[in-house]
Image (tube, rainbow, N blue to C red):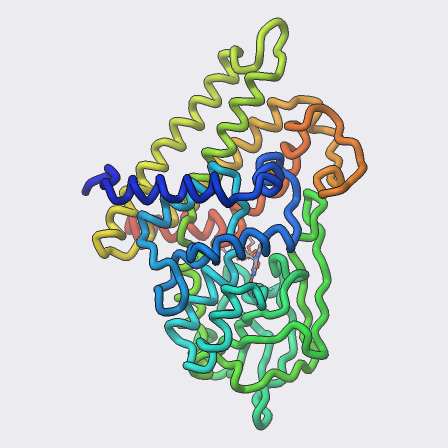
Length: 398
Ligand SMILES: Cc1cc2nc3c(=O)[nH]c(=O)nc-3n(C[C@H](O)[C@H](O)[C@H](O)COP(=O)(O)OP(=O)(O)OC[C@H]3O[C@@H](n4cnc5c(N)ncnc54)[C@H](O)[C@@H]3O)c2cc1C
């Protein structure tokens, strides 16, 4: 295993860096660096810039308009974009649905939907979870009953991220109650403007309606919107989750968070010194940095294995847990660093154009928001408890 970058990979890094310097709008990077909320238009602007360069869908093959980047290139791309404070690529169309359609969709679906994902005509959201089906996803109850050339869909999805922006949702629906729960699930593409769909926001701890409930009341969906075969949706759902779980460690986000923490600790007063000179606080920062370096190395080892053709297995569970712990610890230390300014959390001050005055220095404003928002990391994409079970079974063989 070689953990050093090749000359080609170094050249690719330089190319990405030059592109970011040239094309990443300062308005957007300032917003990301300052922890401000991004609007739908912000994401769309950045997607369009990346698409023009062929890097919006780095994970897609060239034949579908993707960048055909390998695992190491994608890692480099993500490191560079996060450290330049670029907006993240919204994953639902690009990272999740795209690969499913490429593998299991029919020609008409590929021809219609894939270009629309790239050029921003469709904004997708993910309709997997339901009130009674989260970790136990196979229990989905939202039903789709075939009537002629349509399915009639009834039920509820929940935690639908950015569903308020979406015009399309891909759903796991129950098309049969026979056999094992996994055997009666289908994968359906649904236009959010169809009559009978209601989207209701869920406001999270940080005051933002980042997720939604989506209700289906006799929603008529053309049968041609079924992906693959009826009752085979579980296979496609699992395939999609392997794509959802790429870049799960979040090394780039953690590095950006740690850099910001160090900057704040260098500015915040602690008696007659700065906080970074406080040995106890410095030791906590050093510990999280050591953990991050160890995780980044593990991440590279897994990438090296992937580059050599091995599919990542239960190791991604290790990365998910460690990445979550590190990012949540950085959030906690940042909140500690800004001290009393973390208390008067003024959520509205994070919105563009808001005339609400933030309390305290600019850098204090996003600390509480990030702390609250990143509680989600240990829940979505497979909760930490579920990941530990995977590790204990698949790696420790307990
Ligand atoms: C911010 C956010 C965004 C999300 N976005 C989306 C989205 O866009 N689309 C979508 O479909 N879903 C989304 N989700 C849903 C997410 O996938 C689920 O929340 C997650 O799968 C957990 O399911 P649950 O909330 O039903 O909790 P449950 O599965 O009910 O779990 C509750 C608790 O029990 C524990 N637990 C459950 N089963 C086990 C077990 N077998 N062993 C040990 N402990 C267990 C869990 O770890 C957790 O602590 C999002 C969630 C969040 C928080």
